[in-house]
Image (cartoon, rainbow, N blue to C red; front, side, top):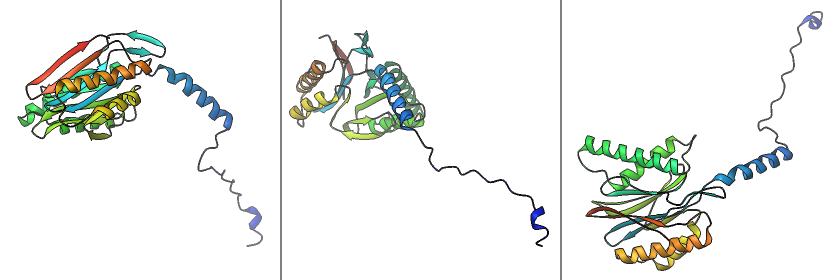
Length: 235
């Protein structure tokens, strides 16, 4: 056997592959600079949802921005979905419109199939599934779903990936911190419609004063047992 040892073929050495690729510090810095440069286009907004005594109030300001450029002073970010459910968004206007149309279509299909109107929680879960299914190509929007049904009044907050959080009041968008501070200070159970509108208007105005990406007016969607009404005002 010793005489044949030298005649055996030599196996090539297999290169070792690291479990995690090594990233140079310089590459990380370049990626960080690119992210900072590419992140300037993300639009801002101030969108609020609140539960009051007889229903739900959704509101959003009108300004549409692209970086430092104001593209529109009349953008709509609150939408009617059914006769008892509405949705308010912050993010890309096109993604908001896609979500609102998709949600309206799916809730109508549900009503025709089951024979009854869809509940608010079911509609919010439906939207969460839509967002999660798009997680690899997400729709850049934060969303508030609100309405009234047999269980009462409720709102739900959703992020880009469809996380679902129930609450009595919520704010999303670039003006969230300022608006939420005002709402938390003034919110109480069993607010009347006028009190809710006053509180929401004060919260959005406070956010506009501190957030350059928000402004130019306010759109309301008011949901009660009598249906949905829409109002708009200019600042």
